[in-house]
Image 1 (cartoon, helix red, strand yellow):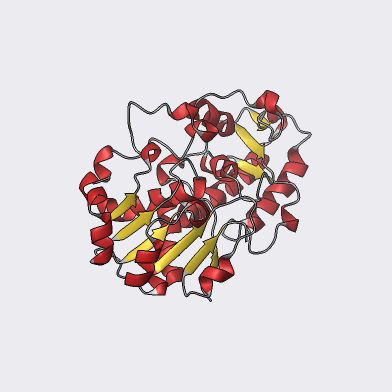
Image 2 (cartoon, rainbow, N blue to C red):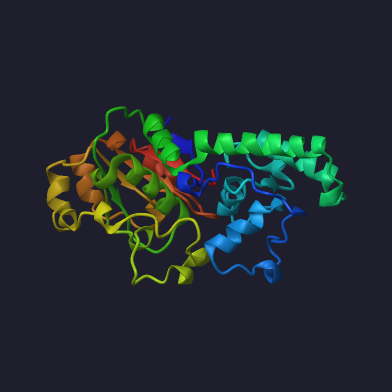
Amino acid sequence: MSLFPITFSIPECKIIDYIPKKIKILSSLIPGDLSTYIYQNETDYYNEYRKSFFAKTTKKGGWDCMRHYEIIANGCIPYFPNIEICPINTMALLPKELIIQGNNLYEKYKNISIHELTKENINELHSLIIKFLKYMRDHLTTSKMSQYILEKSGFKNIKSILYLSGNTSPDYLRCVTLHGFKELFGTNCHDYPKIPHIYKNNNIEYYRLYGKGITYTNLFDENLHNPEFDDTVEHDIRNKKYDIIIYGSYHRGMPYYDLVSQIYESNQIILLCGEDQHRCDYNNWTNRGHNVFVREL
């Protein structure tokens, strides 16, 4: 079987290592209520979750949503109505049982004032927050997700990766997964074409990007992309410089695929699909022997 579920992930640097002081039961940021979308930068947005015990999150275009990860990473418990009906292979890597526990706790405390919480109540809430944070560090960081891809694909001694894209505009799955591979391999994971917004650059107005650029942009120094490798990418494919090839979003472009498929073994080509809604032709690619990872499976 070469078809696997995948989810978004989050840079480990975004995960807090303490439980923040809480001043409200439920975050005022409500999915779908545009009047509550008042945060213009990452710091203010994260702080809203940090000061809340719970934050509502829901299925958006797809079940998986970056908001789930941002809530957990900031020491907040996701309140996720109807998660029980989520398909088993969608959000398969999220701790659904913990989320259900969180839903039950929200029902227990939703009508209680923050000032009415007893020490026992707070300890119960803190205990669940700690479990969420541990699970996230163990399974849902970008580097853990990249390791998951390599393990499922059967690779143990990879030293170099070519990470190919067609369209370089923001795509959460492509961007955060690339971040994980960059953390693991540095310049030995080469993104081509360069995904400019994951790098720190004074010329990029990150806030104008999708989702105001929160969480997935402005992460790495420019020196983690070697422009010399851009000039030799076709030559390097022909000479099999890289151990494996990853297409960060095969729906959004597969440059050099004909060449890559001639040079590389089928199982050395990994395809990622991070689309919300799609008629995914993954059977076509798995039948060719490629390893395919689909978010909304």
